[in-house]
Length: 339
Image 1 (tube, rainbow, N blue to C red):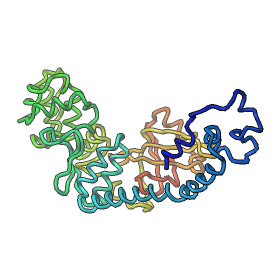
Image 2: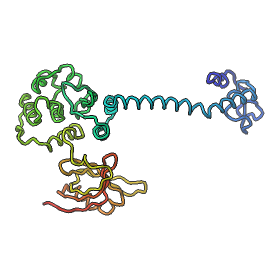
Image 3: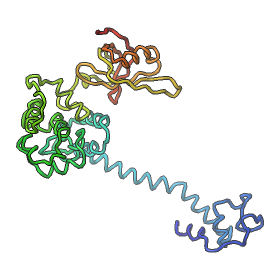
Image 4: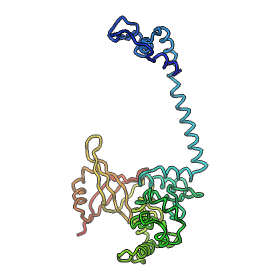
């Protein structure tokens, strides 16, 4: 069908000079007698009746061929996707996670894995992890490529020289550019050496001693769940080993809690009114929130001024969590100010 259209429309011949402005020329149709769709065929010498008859046929076919062809393909792909998700959920979600390019999306899908699909998410392991997320039974192992600061150039060197007996062994065998201070610290904070010692401060101390870094050693006895959460948020962008209290709040559940504003972004809504997207800190965890313009308008000056001054301020929030984990603030008020 398309080949025949090309034959009709192909410019095998040209009309006489000035044919574009000749109202009497059979190939010129300024008044829409034949329709612009067949102009090329008329120029090529085909009769209007022949081409119009053919155009009527393909026009009728076009009314359903596009939808049928595409819907069939989408239905087939949809069936394969559903089949893979049902029979190989861990492998399917590992692939989904590997496709994400920002921490917010990774956190969103890891939450789905753990709370809706019963899939356990594990921190990266320098001896077991690949570049991407990897399924292992009913669990998914974090990929090294999703650890902050571990770039594409470093990962091949890390993979090529393993397994490692300790963090000191890794320092001795991995080229320095592929296991520098930043990369090493982020991998340790992400839990990539937990098999050696679950106290990540102890591993950090070993790391700096092996590198001969001139820094004050960490107090290993001070390692706790809050620090684990801080390390993982910093290196992975989400919490894996220890879950924050916020994780247990149900969607649409109304709650009140105290916290401080760590970051504040403003954006205009469709009506040009300012709404806010604060990053809250409460109980050792960071919470993404939003305030619609109707709420933010009442407290915008107070909130933004205190945030910009970096004042130590605590607020009380009342609201609910949406399906993506954002906290929709209904009420906000300052309840305490520390000097």
